[in-house]
Image (cartoon, rainbow over all chains, first blue to last red; front, top):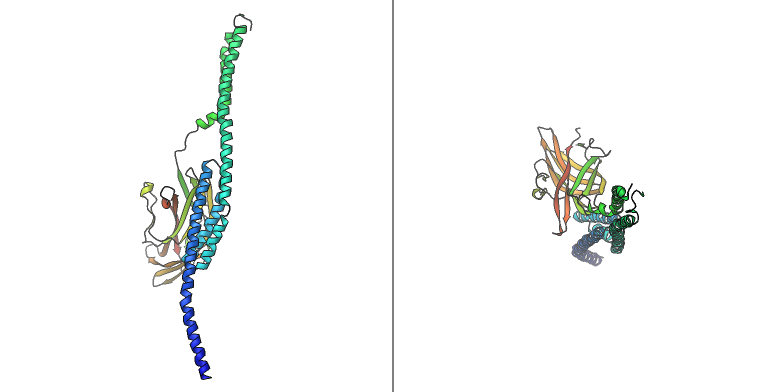
Length: 160
Length: 204
């Protein structure tokens, strides 16, 4: 009986020491993972912002893209706070959620950019080139019409 | 009447028609360029007015304000709002003088949130906050700030009794930072808004 108790005690002590040595490692690992996830999320958000900015420069309406970015940013802010408060698993989870929220962002941004680029080209051709060409054509037509009228009716005094 | 008598009328009609046809192109050329690029930052009370701001604070009670940003920078901007809290002696940010000379508070932020705002667009959010604090020996120790349900420790912020104004005063403020695309980092945008709060204590 005594031997059993000693064995149990030794086993308990051994297990406790083993657990104690493992817990910080697991914690450190979770902390690193959380840090990595937060960093990845920060970098991805920045990439997406630059894509949105690029789309905006071509004339796209990027408000829908910014809504997605704001949602991802909000999750990242919560992840940072959880990390600061030492809640690393929550921080990691939130950072991953933030990353997932940005899935397909690049495709959407590129589609918006291309559409805006096409629209911009047509808009330029119709509203700028077309308008200027129309104005020049109108002036030329008026000039030619006047010359024609002059030739036809110019000599006939009092005809009009 | 001769044809020459109609010359002026003809030219006027031609001129007006030409201007009409050219107006889409002219509207692009003759636009007065934007010269003022800036950001607006504000806080409003829970009723969306600038009059009923929270002032007398009770421990662990929720208070709400609106925080708003209007982007007039000419491009969609990436902002960061840093939430900070200070007592009457700790450093305050500056918001006057040339923007490059303005400095943020050196205090660490309690909470950061990033905001993306399209050009000429407005972003606004409701912020609900509460403080957990305790008084002892003419000083208040602030433990946590809870902002929109997320609690953050304040590293035992101490607020001393202000004998002239008879209260414990803390300043909750929101610094605006802007992502600088050339420097690839956030920089203080020279603006902050905040609320002086009188941290009241229930007397038994």
